[in-house]
Image (cartoon, rainbow, N blue to C red; front, side, top):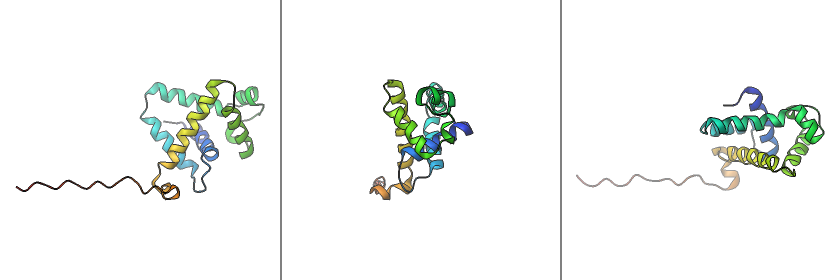
Amino acid sequence: MFTPREFAVVAAVGARTVGAPEQDPVEIAHGVDTALSYQPKDAQREMRQLVMLFENALTGLILDGHLGPFTSLSPEAQDKVLAAWRDSSVPVRRTGYTALRKLTQAAHYAQTSTWASVGYPGPPQISQPAQPPT
């Protein structure tokens, strides 16, 4: 669903919002992309617009005082941008931050490779019901 540029932004956000040692930002972005591919086109368009607000240098300068795309900022500067969105007095910014954070975290922890690190044994195995005698 994402363009390569949007994908890079989601990967960068995932790298900063998940915070797990075994995280793979590319896999996180793939997971978010896959999850959103099942959403209506309007929801996909809105998420793509949100992602590009993070990347937009002019938006960053006006709202957060940094010049440059999100993906070109240092990790520390990216954390400041994310904190500004998280703590903003503008509800839509807080909501946008929360949506991206939850999507990236969900995409990370949906990977079977992460389950052991949080003590999740995986879904229960359901055996096939016994067949009645014929």
